[in-house]
Image (cartoon, rainbow, N blue to C red; front, side):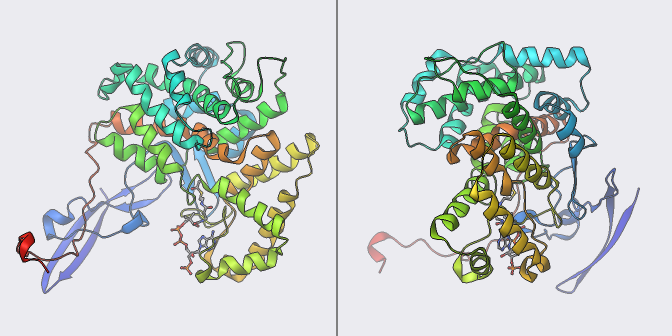
Length: 432
Ligand code: ACO
């Protein structure tokens, strides 16, 4: 086994350690520090985990230096071109591409579980019409555990398939109902004759009083967007799903936590924030150059939303594919969106600017996705919910991998305490 020699001199005490080195299948190296505290009494401090691998995983590979992303070894570009969201979900969850029969079976199961319990419909009515869809979606996903109590036992692996199927199928219905509630339209039920993505489009945009034709171009681009969002190894929301799941919380509860984690503007909420940013620039007439100057000023508190990434120090391959798709879809739908033009000018200006070059900040997945969602007719506050729907198979696969690993322990980071040392309790009457 490979090992690394570590010499530590801590307050005059010397430690010579031989630590195992783990080498990943793509040659990534990690020093296994699990024995560090036991042998030396010290721990590592790594806030935000910039230098810490939290797990071994065989699901997704990212090479951030070279802009590479692969699911189960398959390049994202190939999946984007040839696969569907259902097939990619199968790949992520089961570790390999399905054969024809397996794919058919998986699709059928997703079709058969799309209805939600009728009692759940009343939940939607309890929310104000202004409620953010992410608030509703996270609550609804967690509520599924009340309707399927068998799933509460996370250790029962025999129930995994049906629980995961229910979740992947019903999330569409719940998301669409949340949307319909927010615009005051009647709920549209799922239809078994429609494919996974066509069903989403139909539930969101059709109304019972007139026929609705699901546009295949919209279905195609939705498949692409969902595939590109389907997993991204140990990001904030996925790490949340794993952390909550490590305490043996059930799949529904773990994923509801992931949805909440995704919501923030530094994570999946950035797609909504990008559009707000572009709309503000458009409405104010502020020049792109001036805006770029503003986000470089640390005192402004502003960031260029949709730019930068913890892992990618090169162009995010997903952003590249989404940018191309945005051009294609807008031209096919005959839409001329001034925000796309502003986004392209911002990108151009930023990529020429030393602030962004030096920090290696490039457009990420969220920079252009909102422009496509807008063109498809999604309101801005639905963008992050669409991200959650896309990320679902990744969260499920990651939860499964963690749950099936007999070596999984509850996630429990340590801390370095910086508060008061011991002091006496002062009775209320004696306090100043
Ligand atoms: N605009 C301006 N400056 C930025 C940006 C940005 N978007 N992103 C990073 N920087 C600067 C930071 O101010 C910092 O500068 P400094 O070295 O002078 O202090 C440097 O670049 C490094 O940034 P960190 O915040 O340390 O990088 P980190 O890896 O912690 O953050 C993050 C990554 C959160 C994505 C960040 O780039 C960001 O806030 N981007 C905008 C929000 C966004 O688009 N989020 C979506 C990410 S993709 C996803 O989660 C789905």
